[in-house]
Length: 467
Image (cartoon, rainbow, N blue to C red; front, side, top):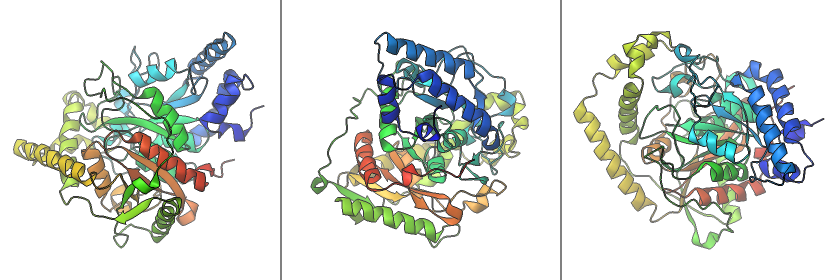
């Protein structure tokens, strides 16, 4: 019988056992599927459980091992995919009631690459409808119901990759794929005590993924450690003819020994006196920054470029999302979405003119240039992730998360990579996290720093009190 300890083990440990044939991919998949059946319904972690697919892929992984064919560190490793990634033969609902029976006859590129790496697809992780592209105020804006946090099911997992966060935190999958337009990987990572990687825009193909905002969307992993994120990103990153925005920039994620004497980090503090910010979160972040200093990282307080990043990001995302989901307005099915404001987004955003959009594009370009200048003086940015713990399920999110997200706005507007790391607990022993953000295609450095931090701390090894 497979223990809970093994279901929470990292990819390296599982991979070592599988390759030595001391752990059966089939038995591992069966153990996860059993845990999903027992725990997922209370958390709304999975919209679709792909038991037959998982067992077929696990048997193939086991057969290949017996024939001496090894596909790499993800061989036989079970995972969940956010329900906006196409999977042949399985429903892909985009989290939306009008699309709950939607299915495709092909796989998203990232799903194909994980299959080729030997990973085992357990199912489709629940998500906020349309990845929040048409807005939402409450956690239940999903065909699956509200994402419930394994640390406290009365609290939210974070959106829009809500199910991906719940699945990994609850030990229902070794890792999961999420997507981020603005916050949807970093938010569930912060609220669920996970490690999440938002890659550089273009680093990972989006072919076969729902489009929310064409110039913002990114696909990345939610896992238990930076080391696990490294394995997953290594499998899914790289150019793809199916996605013209994917980058041909070489993917080099080999771990390196850091020369801290040559590294300089910008410490970007946030204003914890604003409404909604919690002092316990600040204390946890300060402790994380201290750990990095003790490890040898030079941290110097700095200010980011003073440009209206939040405003330009909001304008561009709103217009791109209205374009992406235009057919829902044309056929009237937008009225069946859970959030009542979705149907009125054209009217809500009617004041945005073509001139406004062009100005937003132009300011975005200036912001990217300013950030390139900023990173000429700093290697990375260290800053809090969210300034509060996960809100309660019934809360109006506009009231419980009222503070601005300037770093998230800049990071996503400029397509910059960021690594979210757990760093302790806040109120009611809910997880707290921080982030390290870098210049384009600096994922290797971010992961190196994340691994240094996680060798010095054990927050990523904590588990929620599930029974």
